[in-house]
Image 1 (cartoon, rainbow, N blue to C red):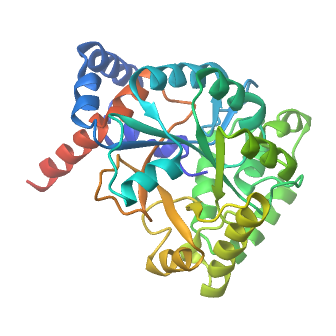
Image 2: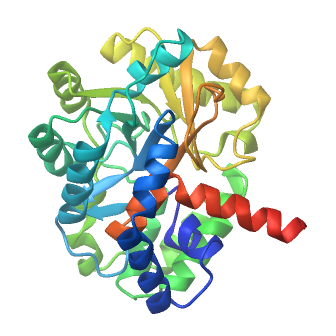
Length: 341
């Protein structure tokens, strides 16, 4: 997944203090109203939120990318109160055409295409009348296969080996696709999924195409591509990278009739996409692509490297308010300046 807990940009890079003190500091900042000030200062910028799954199930080990139901509901209520939430396609169209955007524009996105986007997230989005964009890993839609990080989680979670899981996740991401498959097969042979892991396997199921079509028809949800196999594009051979882009975009166009497809980079960090990838996206008639680089977007934003705010299960509402307001970006920039002073 794009932002595992060990890479939370707030908790690791901005406030390097112990958890209890950090939480107290975050709560103090929110009580002081600093997030209201920064939300006003950034009122002309676009906030794009990145989610993955939303679940009511208890997980045996922290699963950063499966947000608890109540947490998601609280965040949606906050967004409804303080932001105008648009479809990503609408926000990008206005940017391209230099049309005015509502004050405090926000966009809700989901990566991967989990079925609980339909069963758990959509009812809450419907209740608040908030639109969202879901990026589909098209090679897995309509199948029983799991994305490899989810499969890995199931093998480590019942053994409660948190640090080992994150180490394995990052090590595998750093490998080429071929070497990663060999390493995964070895891990799968050594660590079978037990009955406990199987009990939460359904939370990692992906949507079927008929469910995608139903959601698309409803109008509240729009869809984009997230590659075919969730491989980091810059690490693939040029022909494989091109196939990941073209095939996933063609699937969205063919299934849903979408003319200009939106795209989300797998993993999406700096270095995970490059000019060659962007060029392939343009050839595939992609209108915009989102990264996992933290930040807000103004009128000068690169439409093929839009920034997002990643939201995970370890995020308190105080952290959410500080990150979405742009305060964290300001703080990180301040710390960088201090380091180079």
